[in-house]
Amino acid sequence: MSKVLQIHSETRGAHGSRRTSEKLRSQGHDVGRYRAHSLMKKAGVFVKRRKKFTITTESKHNFPVAPNLLNRNFQVDRPDAV
Image 1 (cartoon, rainbow, N blue to C red):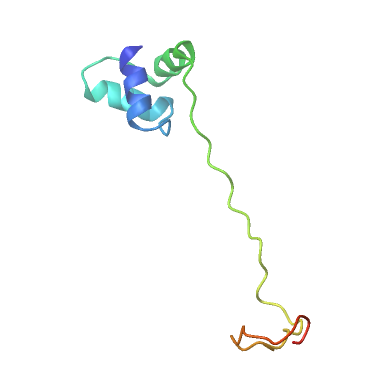
Image 2: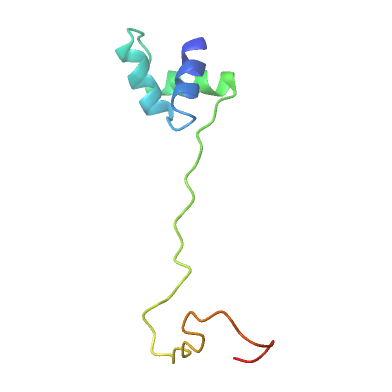
């Protein structure tokens, strides 16, 4: 269990049971995937899940684009002038 916790902290929670069992096997422990899963469960260790990438901007559209009125001239005389 201490090795599982060590692997989990080294990888910042990115390795699941498959990669944890591979890492343990490379260190000389005879641990399969399901045994690694049960050890992780006993230790209270879980994998951080990746968030799904969502597209928030649709830039390929035929809508009119607003004109650039300021033209990077941010010095104005009074409010609501541009």
